[in-house]
Length: 239
Ligand SMILES: C[S@@+](CC[C@H](N)C(=O)[O-])C[C@H]1O[C@@H](n2cnc3c(N)ncnc32)[C@H](O)[C@@H]1O
Image (tube, rainbow, N blue to C red; front, side, top):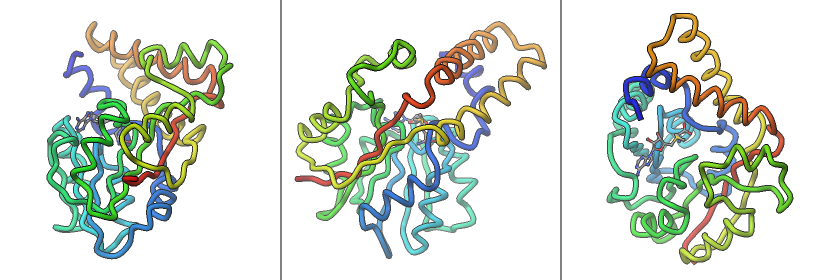
């Protein structure tokens, strides 16, 4: 990974993965999170969902953590208007003390693995704590080649039953699920496409050109099957 090219391409984007405010609202409702809850946005990226959590839960204490320091800084800056009840820092989401009533983890659980990540989060939850996370999912066992091509870098992908198996293997049960498909992906890729076009017109270095080509290929692969490429958003609790 050329970090300078990555930063040029990604820093300043609204979000770093598919999702939307309605996903956050749905998960908060499904988890029953309210009042002065303690919430962690694990793998917060530039903080789009941290901001929604802070807005939707006006009395909650919200922490946000990301391995990539510029994302943690962007989250801290965009949430500064909420004052001390929202904190963001650079760190490993598997090693935060907690305890939390809700851990929100959008498009980041696959870095740890579902079973491993839920295992790490277990010690970071309150007694009634819940986890909401999104995970790549195959919608059927007969997906077209375009879908498999899109997910070729993630051979661990399964169907819904496979996600459920990995949740159960971590000793959790599922309270509710919903698909992240279509518009939430456009919300991530459309601004990225505009950034790519701007950088192309400015004449990129060879390192940046290679990064642009990788992102262009990913977006083209998504555009080949946007109604079949999905995350499964699950709200779960220790069984
Ligand atoms: C696909 S992005 C999603 C970001 C954000 N949740 C969003 O939806 O905009 C995944 C994020 O997880 C972060 N990440 C990966 N492994 C992590 C870890 N162990 N601890 C904290 N952050 C991590 C990456 O730096 C990246 O910002």
